[in-house]
Amino acid sequence: AIPMSVTVGVGRGAKAGVLVRDAAALQALSEVDTVVLDKTGTITEGKPRIADVVPSHGFDEDYLLTLAAAAERGSEHPLAAAVLTAAAERGLDVPNAEGFRSTAGRGIEAVVDGTTVLVGSERFLQERGIATHSKEAGGWSVPEEFEPHERFGATAVCVALATRSEKPGRFVGVLLIRDQVRADAAGAIHELKSLGLSVRMLTGDSKQAAVAVADSVFLDADHVTAGVSPEDKHDAVLALQAQGKRVMMVGDGVNDAPALAAADVGAAIGAGSDVAIGAADVTLVGGDVAAVARAVRLGRATMRNAK
Ligand code: ADP
Ligand code: MG
Image (cartoon, rainbow, N blue to C red; front, side, top):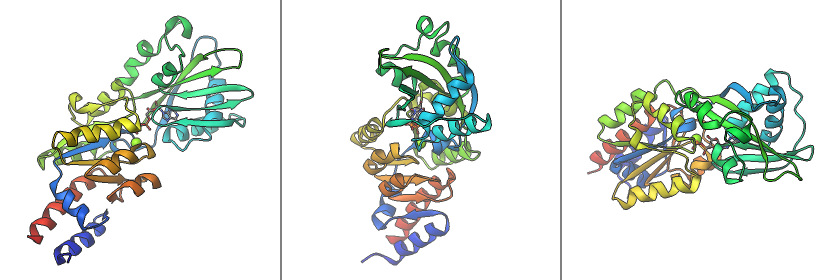
């Protein structure tokens, strides 16, 4: 039988915005020693905005944004919303695209007027054999030009075009995207540490951007794992468990679902996608990072009372 205190614990959690799936999840919460936080949408607000549109030499700025927006229309990623909002704010006429394809944790592509438009991380383009460096890119290189911005936590999203005759494709510019760190993130992470937990960050974003955000919430750079795919996130959780850690993974996106499912406690946060919520043991309704600490404290208090 489930002890009364556990039933009370689940109810108390619900009032505090911590929806716990079952008694086993409360038990697991009480045993967590490591908390892994996704960056985008978890430590940051997940409401990114375009800060700058930077075409490569000779390419038109509005046309760059127009093509990127056309390709992103099929994506549910928060970065896609930022691109579409910026295009709308500039009053751009965004054409239809076809053949939309998404590579989780990397980027997307679609065909606009017979030309394939690729939008995603530098790594996404590099994996397709598209050079993002100075000579080919028309005078500058992604790492050199954008490192200063990424040092402030901006995400540099790269755009490339590939026509049928032209292989593998041509790099045409960068969209610099900013996402605010959640106001309560630094305080909440401090609280997690004071509960004796080891706190880590996992992200598909670049190392530079990730470390900048980590700095602003007082997370050590050596607790940051960047540039990871959804499968890598899942594997990172397994690697911690193999070291004997009891892992709570907190994330919001489809890309976090495999890691949420693998963790001892998977927690979906905020406006988490349905896929994330489906994979989670705990849902943190309010979207505040402080709810992570509330969840751990709830688990510990409930299990103490159950004894
Ligand atoms: P996180 O792990 O931080 O939540 P994701 O795994 O969703 O981030 O994405 C990792 C990186 O992949 C992004 O920083 C971006 O460079 C690229 N990316 C993914 N999806 C898209 C998209 N729809 N448009 C542009 N870039 C994308
Ligand atoms: Mg995310």
